[in-house]
Length: 309
Image (tube, rainbow, N blue to C red; front, side, top):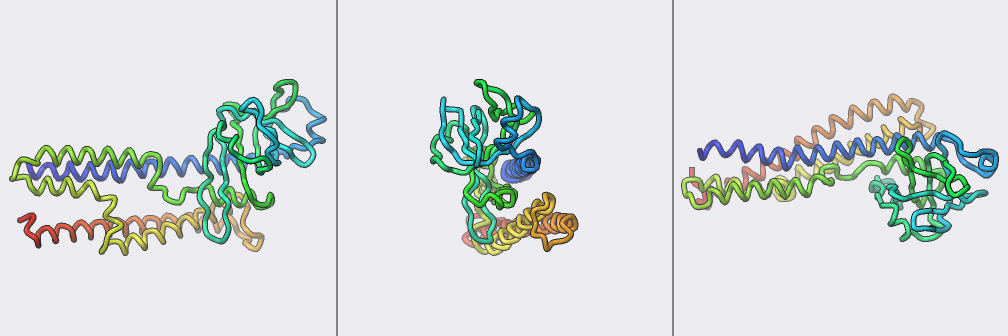
């Protein structure tokens, strides 16, 4: 019975500490991929101006509009002042994005998602990019979100001609392992391991089982302790490199790379392949570092005769 519990502990660690967080990471990748595709679709749509506005009633299709926050009325109507036109935007129940200010060559943080009722905290004059459908509301055209074409609202602080480049470059999370799934997953895994350890706590014959269960609780933290920490350093550098390659791929797909790069499609393909290999190697190094730390801990326990074989 004592030996049969170890595969169970291993499966618990793999499922709650690895599989569930990684599932959240892949979900994040998919979410930002949809965001990039949606943004690219809108940035290539018609640019709304005063001339177009005066010549049409409700019109099907996507439009984009940029300007500055003028005011918020009724708690859910955002008024955007452009060069020659001021447009109302119905933002109720709409997810908005706040593009972080970034300087330098390093990769920025992903855009912050804010709810529509948090936009009142933004100051007048903040730059806004709007994309979506136009519909008549209160006897005038409004940007309105629909199920088929949800509004895209991005608040930003960069030159307008750099907006597309900055949005695509930023739309990836820096640490995909840490996502909305991760905290709950780590807590659930730890509670299960505590329960297993407590179940064998008063049985001397299963002392190693108790130690193994308790030690397994801290597996995610083992990557930051020596001697395996050096592998974590390499892991972080390699994952950052893989992210840079993926970002270059994204920019190439949307033709946002500098003009001197003459083969964006080849750049995208090479970047994707290299990113997969580098990321796989990074995870191998991280796993190796954790295994080294686990072995190191058990050697210490054996040395001090905490456990005996």
